[in-house]
Length: 102
Image 1 (cartoon, rainbow, N blue to C red):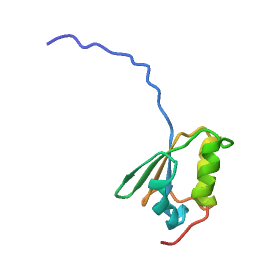
Image 2: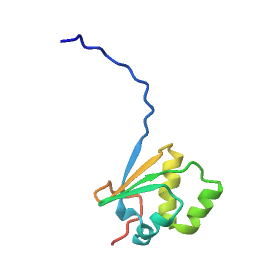
Image 3: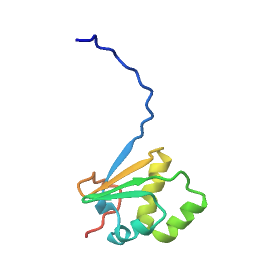
């Protein structure tokens, strides 16, 4: 056997915020794929890339396409330097965020 070597890598990592889909209106789910937000859909939800901002043209377009509840999630994540939201049916529920039944 060869001797084991420890390899040190400099990796750039990102925080992910887990959020229940119940924190956005159902209408947003129908608009996500057509919006300018970068997202990947999977059976239980979406991976959402949080754009830096919120004062540029992209954010203006998003405000026209998506609900204030969704925009508030993006803005809060941006304020906290979180670049990814995992919007999931089984994601975390926060009592201080609005909830929608759908």
